[in-house]
Image (cartoon, rainbow, N blue to C red; front, side, top):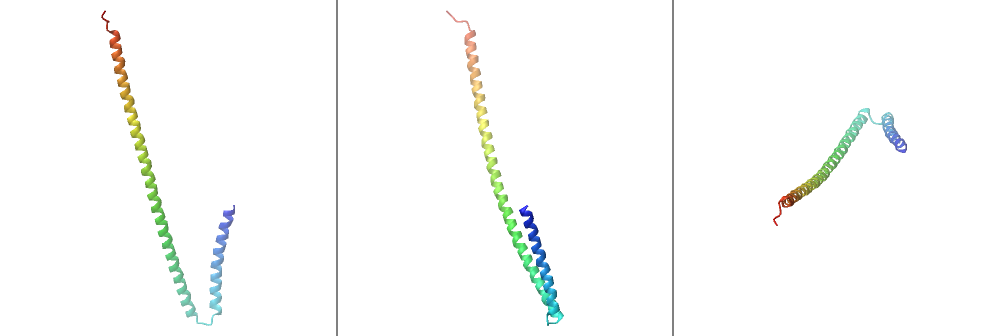
Length: 125
């Protein structure tokens, strides 16, 4: 709930900032001893400068976000590669274990068969 209240305070500040700007600009035009065309020109120049600064800030933020996304992507790929390598090692280990177990069974079967053959042969006296 505290974060929600903080959000509304931020919007209130921004709205107050814009309202103060417009009221101040209106009072300046009304009370300024200069001609209206000078005031309009200065206001236009100020608005352009503000627009340029906002655009530059946007570009900088966009660049930082892009760099962060690229960094996270690289880190994710490294993790993915590490996991794939671990899975491949595990699969290879399982394959070796299964092959060894199969070989042991074949060897055991041959031993049992040999034992059966020798048991079924009549023994010479």
